[in-house]
Image 1 (cartoon, rainbow, N blue to C red):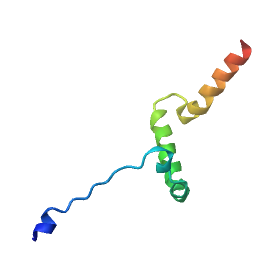
Image 2: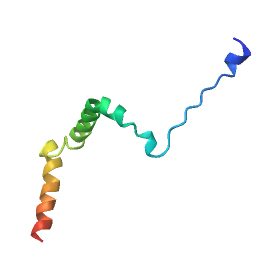
Image 3: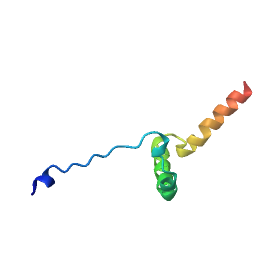
Image 4: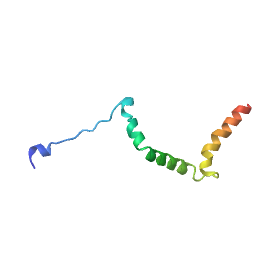
Length: 69
């Protein structure tokens, strides 16, 4: 190894602000985003009595309660 190879260092810095959101990349991997989101919903509501339907039913029932009041 030469001296240059030993001292070679790569620094990776994140982008800041909204510039870090790459909409083209999100669109290209939209199926992955869908499956990851669906997996989180399934895991969160797996042990609920109604399962993943509770994710839809709970906000709907809350809306009905506030509508009646």
